[in-house]
Image 1 (cartoon, rainbow, N blue to C red):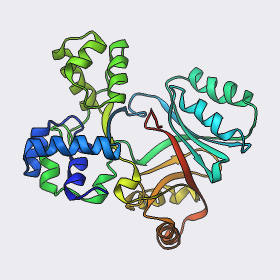
Image 2: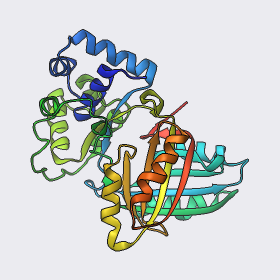
Image 3: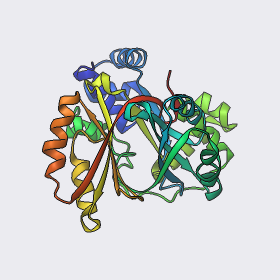
Image 4: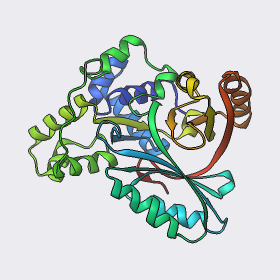
Length: 320
């Protein structure tokens, strides 16, 4: 379980994933050594990771949420194969292990077709496929789940946030081979040092520093802090699929986005038009949330809740 200072460190890094330990220490009013020690412990004991992510919408890519129904004996092997693919970001087993939830990101129609129209339909023992294009995100990405926890004060948030946080975004620059090499390293370790990034890209450290700033100012690149739910005392994860009257979809999604149990909510294509992820303390808390908070949204006609059994890939990283 994270204590108060742990949560403050995590919240600070969510706001600026590449902030130096000395800067974080100054904002939190502790020593550099304390922040460095806490960060090392969080990585070792809580599996904390700082991840550099492209903003799918800003760079013109498309995200799909796939739901695959499999025979019970095949779900694990199919999920493992999907997790090894470079175009998948999240792969999870749900519904007692017979459904695979998978988020894919593709830059071109050909990349989408390669998975959706060719590979999956030829995979034995997949008995059902439902593909939902994510068409608008109401919460997630740049938005911090830790902002809902409230670990930092408004003054601390302002002090640690990058100077361009509340400024108009620059145009997204064209991404080349060097950018892809840069992002590959940042996907693995968002706090990778300039020498490592320079080696990966073939650029000078000055060029790397300038390019990082350009990508971040444009909103193309942002940094997430990934902390497994149990470290926050949240043992229950689930996906929620909702059917909402079209005229009330925005209001319903924005209401869900305000709930502390919801780290992600988006509009989708398909028979349901909103998808949200949930994290709760336990099964009882999930019941309370569904029957008290979600049931109070009048425009919701239908809801399907799928508990997550196991996560195989999270934010592009394979899990043991």
